[in-house]
Length: 400
Ligand code: URA
Image (cartoon, rainbow, N blue to C red; front, side):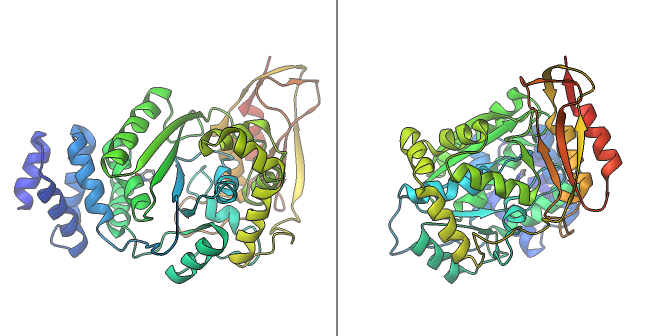
């Protein structure tokens, strides 16, 4: 069977849903070898997949493990997925905001890899906050608070874990159908009704150009809808970081400022746009309802919303502007890499991170700045990575 499947993929012939399911099953039970699976993925990466095949792959991956069940709870059940970026702390604000507006938000999130931060790492800046809740706890927190943010368990979409590890090893991650199936299979197991996607483009994003982001957004919307989810995708700019804080605990502080009705305007604007709730969302941020849900969620997951965050004892070094002018570029890619070098991120899954380190941007694109005024503050742990990070931050800015 696998010989035919490989030949079909190599020749670019459409495969049936049954054959795609057979392939996914075979990857998990070992009847398809790792070499065969890698070849199959490489053919998809080069020759693509039809929309019907992408839907079939998504379904097969969703059905490869268990699903969460919310029997007895009333919805609407909604979630958001971001393709990831530098300083992206939207989930920390949006989950409690939606809960305050009567939605139920069963948000399964991931950890950071490379220059992209992960929501779970950010939340673990809060001492005691637990990000690996079991099914009974997920249900309890969702019932009591209206939202949770927790990690994916091994029982959910196991085919994605296998296939993603193979893609990572074989250079087959950048394929729109494979990314689509990977993202949606992990969201479909949450048993939600509506999914909002934040597809980012720019130097700090997975998709570097707006055209590439548009292609992925269209595929996610098409396959999401064909899988029975109300799906809405927004494109957003990641040529400069979102907000002013980059790094785990620093981002939690900024998210809380947004939940208090303040924080940087670009963060608030994106949260409100993704919520789809306009003035209602603005009001819940301003009158403390979203903040109150955040505090309840943090307590329900074991943290103290009023307590100090991890890694607060960092040293701070300033990078200043060599001359006066207007900030023309504030490059997310370089700034993300600088935060990574200070210890905010990891290269490989399983590596530890430092929760307190990162950057606070004093200037962003369009800001007028005097000579010698700060561009950014580097929060570092005893100088680790400082010199290279300082060089990257200086190179990230163009002041003209
Ligand atoms: N994020 C995912 O979850 N899967 C991919 O394939 C790429 C990015």
